[in-house]
Length: 275
Ligand SMILES: NC(=O)c1ccc[n+]([C@@H]2O[C@H](COP(=O)([O-])OP(=O)(O)OC[C@H]3O[C@@H](n4cnc5c(N)ncnc54)[C@H](OP(=O)(O)O)[C@@H]3O)[C@@H](O)[C@H]2O)c1
Image (tube, rainbow, N blue to C red; front, side, top):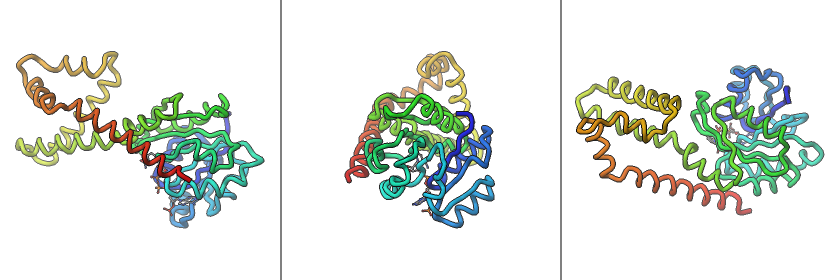
């Protein structure tokens, strides 16, 4: 579908990053609409992007090819059941970006007759370096899958999973992942200051090193383990540092942390989808 009309239900942080990405990718502003109950949000969105905004979700979805559900998970059931009657005769693609809402629950709340793609984006979408996992229910057409991918690709990498359970794993890796790297940066900064560097130098050296390592790993044709071995000379400083981290079982810590995040994602889905 070359030109599509897209409506965002909820005009908060994630909706804004997606709208910004779509406009930068060439989607005409007159094809984008947002519905949000807050007059302040609506006026900000109009000012930022020049798009049409609505206070009422039903007004906003009339004639839309894609509806992006971008409200908080806790209010998704109320929003979805409110939209259901308006979706019975029309066939837009529904795209959820909500964390912890299973597609079976959302599909049921939406009335049971919609094409639905569940996605899990992450916060670097705000700077168009996001990573999003996508899962399509089986009634989603090839064209609709492409459309979902086009929308999320406007803010970064997209990756399909065939089994929805894997969205919990995506949540544990890339959904929560930015915070793990922020924690590592925080720890490196603090250690650098303890070693005598001033705050600004500690931060700049840490952040550029993180960025440089990520770029190298992305551009390299070998994996991170090989890259690490290549910069670890026997008897050198890196070897000594890595030895300390291995002694503290750094891989075991990550395995435990990601498993805990995956399990929490399952628990939240059980909780949010219980009705
Ligand atoms: N932020 C992230 O990093 C991230 C990452 C992955 C997934 N997500 C998912 O993205 C979704 C949105 O997150 P966010 O961070 O963008 O939240 P947000 O900034 O709070 O945006 C949600 C927006 O929805 C509006 N809203 C509330 N009730 C509504 C209704 N009945 N109809 C239409 N709009 C309504 C809110 O308005 P008020 O503020 O006036 O209530 C707010 O502007 C969530 O489901 C979250 O799980 C977020």
